[in-house]
Length: 106
Image (cartoon, rainbow, N blue to C red):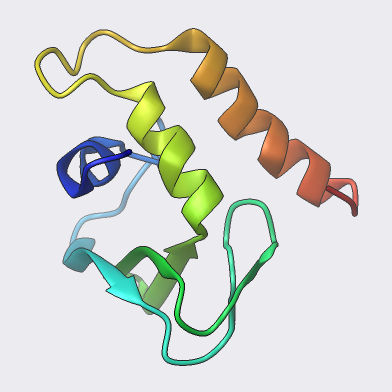
């Protein structure tokens, strides 16, 4: 089972360029009060599902949410004791989920 620490340690935007003044306001695990869409794979996050929610000011205020499956893959991508070590299979699967969503299907 994934730990919150390992999920939150994963930077889903690594390599993206930021702007001066960009600020992360909140990055935590939450329980959905209503259905949402996963910003990564576009699957439905149903009411009651525990998922990651990140709120920030990136020019505009933005909220990003990741479903439980994407969170599990985030945890597999990192190692709590040595974050520099990545599970390349999990990274590939995480990226494949986004690619499938971009093509219109899971």
